[in-house]
Image 1 (cartoon, helix red, strand yellow):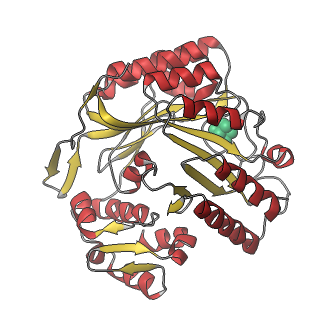
Image 2: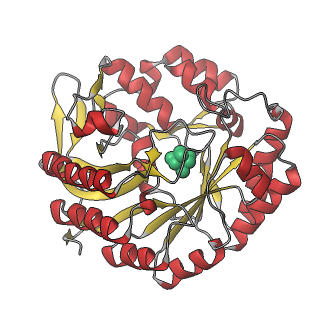
Length: 388
Ligand code: SF4
């Protein structure tokens, strides 16, 4: 189904006003807003998967979106279909989405193509369809294996078929399997958490994303009276991840992400390092190297072609933002790469902040690199605030 072409670097041009090197856009994000229900902690834009008619309207509009952005894209290096829950679409709808995407865009032969799925809506026929279409990375939203904790999170469905799903994806040749887990859930014990991480590692997954629960205002969990997990326990829970995952061959490469060497999420890694990307679908963000814009955050607004929200930042502040993002990764920034991406030097961009963060043991500077220490990763939000 894929129209692919050999891997090559996208063409770049230089913006004379900012010295920013701008590549033709090679990363695409597609937002599928539908879910089985609303989780109690969820602050993403998602809506219950309503009528077939609504989903058809969404797919038709998405095709228009694809056509509109096609001219701005180089052959795609990465595609990330997220949400929401893309696997909630039925097999015919999923086929429409995948074929519309691969017929509109040119894909590199080594494209990384991720689709987010819920284990209980990813049926065998849907998994086969994804693999046939060229999807080579599946991200499974598991969050917790414990039924009581899943209840606290307000997660729909169960994880009974998870082991079979992973085995089936392997048989189909899907080379990258990620699992998302959440820790620091009210009432969660260290032994429950250890059991979740261990069981996921025993499945032989390639990638693990673990997020400490954030209780966003306006969500049911954010507004509930449940006591939070204390900070010391939260740090111990992260230590469990690092230890168990290391034993299974997964290493941390970003604040919340671990992978087998070579199985890091290329899409996210590119974006953390300042790459441009286009987002299609409601609430999807895009970045062209200078301007970030976000599509209307409701399905109705997006179907009615309401204008996107634009985030204008002076080039210097944009460069600081890119610096902070890259310092969420273990690799951090190669100085030359940062200069090539933003046209600036991190030490003259934010001299005092960088010096202070080095003195505080958050960052390390070498001849060629600037990267976070373990402490810098633990206090990644503080590092980012200091640089912005
Ligand atoms: S499945 Fe994901 S996107 Fe959907 S409601 Fe739950 S957390 Fe939000």
